Length: 456
Image (spheres, rainbow, N blue to C red):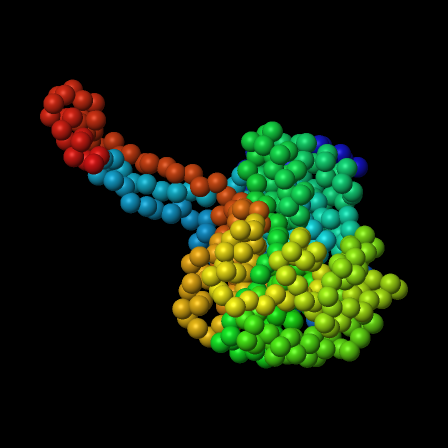
């Protein structure tokens, strides 16, 4: 069995031999990955059930299906993405043409989290493959069953000198981060993201950091209240709130707060049942440490709905709590099924409050008022989001998904995944049938005046 360093060295040799560069090689690798997932989707679903108690429906719609969609999109568009892009050539460079070539970075490290262990490993991997890289995958040690299935899939279709999945704890992470990669793609917490960036800086390795944060949801008085509540409850219930773009807290106009809260209660019950903590299809909290932390937040909150939990199942029912900006539940990302509601009267005031905090990964607006929508979108910086929905912006292969500031850097999905794992190489191809002598400045005054005209 090879060490991590030996695997990386083997991938380095494989890459410099040019094995991954052709369209045919990349296309074949994407197809292998696609059909292997299709063939073993029941095993993947069972693993997600074991790790997170996800239902088959949720496992497919939020992990397996998204992964297949992403691979299919890249497969369909790969030839177009790989084609050099011709751009305008300035008169100064006449006669010539200018092109941008997309070339792979080389040896890539992809570190994925436990909350969407399959999707957040396979989706960036598809981008790395499409761009022509080799990859070492390091999934979270918390989602053991899913990691095992992924390792079986990867080792069954790829040699480890091309794609390798390495299991293990944080010490394995440290060993990997001490090695020199050409690119690191990390999804996880801000705290670990800082460590990844620090380690990468020692080798001047570029990074993508997909982090998180407290993603606000603003419910304006013009919103369609029942629909807003249903979509917010769905976004909070998905994976039991353990989603980096989950609606973290609701800012609700005071004139509709009571009605919205009633509708949110109804929506949670409709989605998860009266006793969600005992619902076999309702996801569990990943481990005891995370579970106990969320119970602590419940104990410090003003609960207006829910609050039930099961120590046997390590499940916490969706819970609505009254909150203010100084509440315990507002001090850090919740990452669980607890929904604080803060009432507001003045939109400018909450915009100022949001802007005074770290920039969130997502923001959601529920309104029928275009002026309200445009005001929020123009004044608040965030990674991405939705108007009159939650979560679903990340389901697009046509828009980049990623954070800003504390919530991360870099984006991916579709063409943006290909671009993330590619270096854009600019090439000026100068023709030789003539040589413009002005550049050499032999006739100083005349040439200088001409250059000033061209460069102004």
